[in-house]
Image (tube, rainbow, N blue to C red; front, side):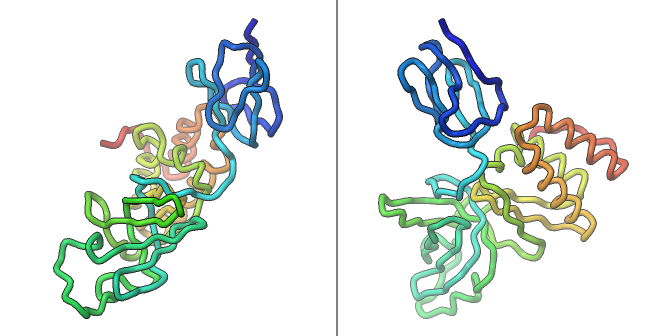
Length: 237
């Protein structure tokens, strides 16, 4: 007999039994003990078909190849730029992967990217020793000028973006801000001061209420009440 002891979106703790029986399979953040599926961390339950997994509520970003992340330049070397990735690991941006422009030998690299600059990068390689390489060649990869950057829980990034970009699209429309959400938990926004403050407030709400069902509609109602605008839930292309 199969018995699921939790519901989708429930918050569970390590050691909690999520299901009994062999009708479900353990996913990320869970393990099997006998015929039971058990939680190995604090997280939010996600039941996807026959798989039961957990979405962690905390934890630092771990770089993965293909991720689009926001980085800050912390060192300029002869061979490129060393970047802070909002994780335990820094990344290296080489001259070859930095720009399509020709860079002459001995050029002052700070004219391209200087200390403190924020860049939108893509993780191109992660070695077994966690040496991280990033690239700046590709759609949307660029240096960010102006605006503000905030840090969020990287595990909440999917909720901030929303299904097919629906959540971040709502925030952009209501606040009038340009917004880029990095998979490493850094978010850049640029608009007028009131719009930026509204975007920050909304993102913090999503962080706090990410486990609540129907969150997109809750955020839509909040933004409409705050701005007086009529908003439409859109999917980004």
